Length: 231
Image 1: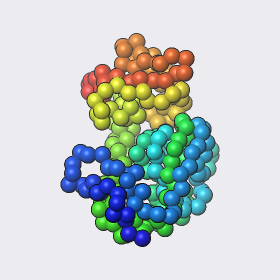
Image 2: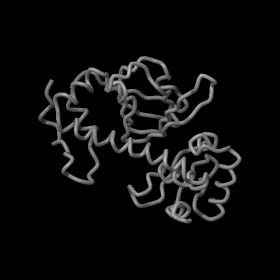
Image 3: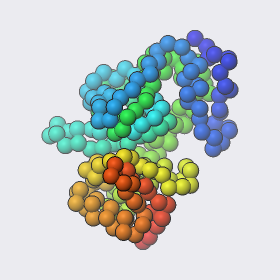
Image 4: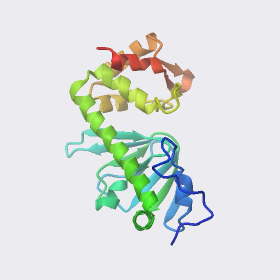
């Protein structure tokens, strides 16, 4: 089915630095989409289940984690508003390689595999934008690997906090997560929870992060960038 012409014009890759209005693009296709909501700490799909759909995050935080045969969990990514996940099904992935779990209340759009395939086939502007989105994610994963190999655990933690706070997108301090879990941070950094606790206390004393009241929300300040830049 062709895109509804009443919808706003697609933002192309030539309109640089403008956020893509994925809501408008998705609205142009009928059928194959489902609005779904999950509370915090709910599994959206599990590792090994059939890969039959892509999800778009309208609002919320989602953790992607892989579990080894020995039961050890590794966090692959933490995603937020405007991100997609589960895209492997488009590339021929038959089973989910990771478990997707909500870290906060989430409002999602589930896009069935046949619909996303049709969108990418029929609308070249959408396929270009989607490819750009995926390449950006892939670059982020490569940077994560380099960070893991060459930087100290303190610098890795600082970088992860800045990424979770979307530093650079808005140029201001931003709340990361309510009740952020130091165990999750330790898994992402590749260190122990006690080391994460030590560095978080250090960052707090330096005024680089602050906890927001009894709910345990966390605000990251731009000064945390100095930890990464310092040799």
